[in-house]
Image 1 (cartoon, rainbow, N blue to C red):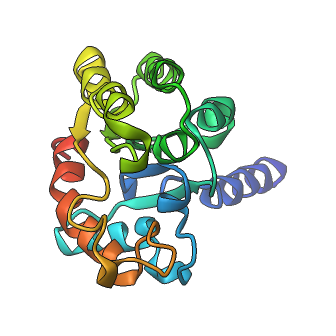
Image 2 (cartoon, one colour):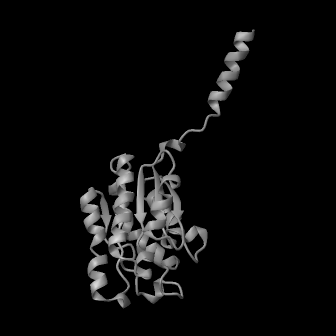
Image 3 (cartoon, rainbow, N blue to C red):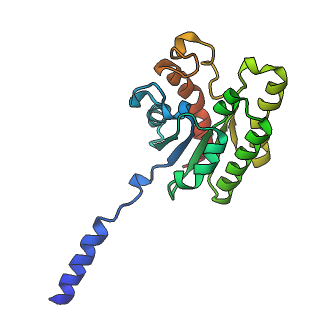
Length: 206
């Protein structure tokens, strides 16, 4: 009787152990306010909209919002290790916009992103790196140093690359909030439409 009771108790414990839900791919959107959904309802944020788009494409992924408004590449570097769950199938690295807005030396931006990509490679986590463009007011010299660094890093680390996160949205008043910097719901929808094929390819065969 005692042995039977022990067996039943053990079985009960096994049945409630948490498991990765349906083996869905887990994607971490690791970025700044563009990822976090600054000024938007939660349902209009990039991670939520991306998850919905992926489901429509037959990829029922879990997309974790790891965006921090105001974050620079240095901020992302500082929090990377504790921002990722143990099981991750893809990290979308969306950082650099605030570096550009603050005029941070592109050498420092590149060094921070290089460190992040090295850490992710060490954990064997696939990456989709998104590019950013420097604000026009910082001048041609700054842009020539800043804009190409994302593509160079993607090539150096052999990771998937989306050239400009705000492609088709930047400088479009109808797609941005009143600050002219953050996409509104329609702008996020356009970003998601454009980037979803890149995310699917970066995930690879399932």
